[in-house]
Length: 614
Image 1 (cartoon, one colour):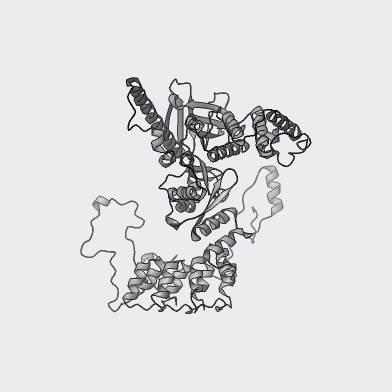
Image 2 (image 1 turned 120 degrees about the horizontal axis):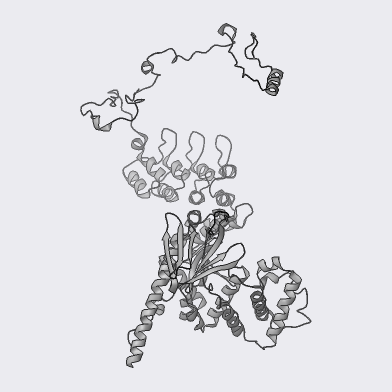
């Protein structure tokens, strides 16, 4: 306020508004009250002290950094004091206190989860029931941190008492339940001395704490505490089917349940699945799963050469090599998704599938005779068409839809296959993306007409229909591709700038194919014979070019390493095939019997070598 007013902290809002309208505004400054008019008066004692270094609070040890506030020192001029440093502080001679880790080594082993260390300390004579300074025993710590093997060792080998409570009245079961540690809960419940209904000082049972804190895998721990599951594997299975957990958590619970039950679900793209019992549990390799499938389903050697074991989610997939640990991949999948995609790991639940080998060429596929292999190839091709992973024109979609109807319903019957017959199942015969663009009734009528035409050809053999479907798909260069996701930046001019285009990149034995993710149309294809490429994993860039210079595209993708590895593996395979063909031609020209010459394709046995490199 311009006026000499006694109340300096007062601001006249009307005057401020008036001065804003006139363009003249001076900001007022609030003045504090005199000390004698204040209700309370506080003084910081450090303000009046000129030598702050000597103002030391009541502490045990006081250390002053003599270099503080002097800027960056010239380390070449600093000499280390060897006899007695300014940082050296002598403790009182009667000081005999030990660090916690030194005073309680068994507690430390329980915290760290080392069974060997815990057993060694027990053998050294340390008391397993001794409370530390916080009144926690080693069993409390092992239960809190979820170290089930240590809990078991303390109880079995050390004879630890599971009913011992800390200052809060909590037993080890209280702590395991509150932190959502179902494996520890199971171990403790197997101990006869444990009381599920024990109360802490707040009158809470372990189940109360579990449902209140909701930490980690609390749903599973609650199942065990309520008695709703017979064992840990069953508890994970029940929790996966309950309402509440997120999709990602459900998937993880299912994977853990299968792991605990030594079971693994393998999906097929025809909608079926197989649940395998695994003898090796956590140590199960992809080759073990393939052999178990072959034994259970009596798969032929030809079929095993055509297919491989894949781990996949909507935005990420790769074929597992025979020495990949399946359970480890399932557990680490959220980290893979976070590292290699822009997707939310919650939406990228992993599954194991039996799919077409990524290194299988169309020529090799055409020579397949096994009926089950042909059926599975048809199912995979149909799935890729219906999910729009393979771009298809409306004409293609209707033709393939007619074949699919012939496979599903046999010959066309006008009395049955009339308008409205596919009203609720049209997406099982044509891509859903096409249904959104066209009138569903017109599209259904077109598919039914194609079905009628197909029936006139008297194709009753389902195997021939499968081959007819596959034969049409083989004409697409991107058939059999492993797909990756990325973006490209179209070339711009000074007057026109274009936004990045989201694409998916198909890598097949024929070449690399870029598909517009929005329009689902093929933008370009480059055969391996004309391909020039480079990969920069640090910049997440994959540069695609052609030998004649007509193609020069830079793809931004976090999956650069996977793409580069697969392309290199395919080029090695193609080079081996070329050399074999040359050797075979020389033998034929000399009219000599071929001996000890194995085609590279047979040597590879389609075992996912490309995925292994990726």
